[in-house]
Amino acid sequence: LFLAIYVGVEVSLGNWTYSFLVEERGQASLLAGYVVSGYWLGFTLGRFLAGVVAARLGIGPVALTFGCLAGLFGSVVLTWALSGTGGAIVGFVVLGAFLGPIYPLMIAILPSLAPRWLVPTAIGLLVGASVVGGAFFPWLAGTLAQYVGLASLFPYVVVLTTALLANWWRIVRRMSPAT
Image (tube, rainbow, N blue to C red):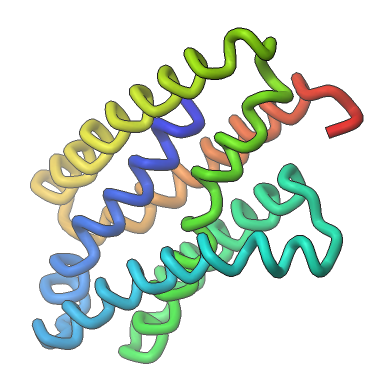
């Protein structure tokens, strides 16, 4: 469920940001395209740099995931609240940066959640669940946008991010104290 929701957030933002910025916020098409590119750039940089920064600061994968989820929640709320061009540019890059590391962190933590012999199968199930989430949640975002309006994107992402935090808390409770 965690990775299904996570990929749903990632793809929903990646797919609907352009429409949201152009139709809801009145941004120019070219700028909206650049913002979406900035989102994916932030995502990529987050994946590459989070581990390096965490290692230098002595932060483990569980704490790093909590930090990314908290940063994600905060940046979603701030990006939603800031309606200007600068807020959109910075907000979506930061959103991407906090989202990027979460998927590989979950895969890295999986061996502490499942017996060793079951880890390869569990990874396969996680990947499958994430694909389902990547199809379902963006579709739901689009359905909400069609019937409620594109302004529903950020409240929707706030709800999904809250569900991510709740699910992560449940996952961490199942882990051994040494992790």
